[in-house]
Image (cartoon, rainbow, N blue to C red; front, side):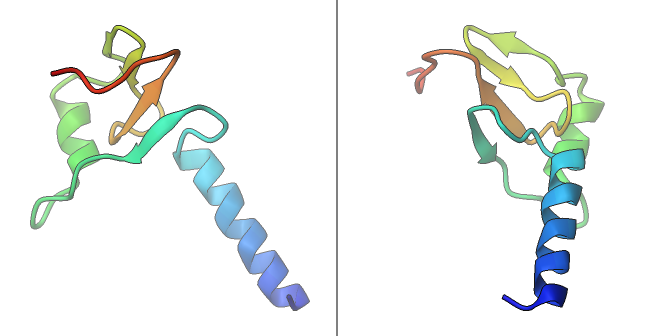
Length: 76
């Protein structure tokens, strides 16, 4: 990898760390963005950031990430 690519990669990783929950178990970005809007903004506007059910929590950092604080699995 060239130095400029290394710097570019570092910048991307750093920016992700500022906007996404890194270093915790998560489902990643869960919902698809609707046309003309962002799923995270809708979830945040609904007041769901930080909402927790069992070990699953809507991330405080990025509302479209669902965190797993233990052994949470798909609920049916």
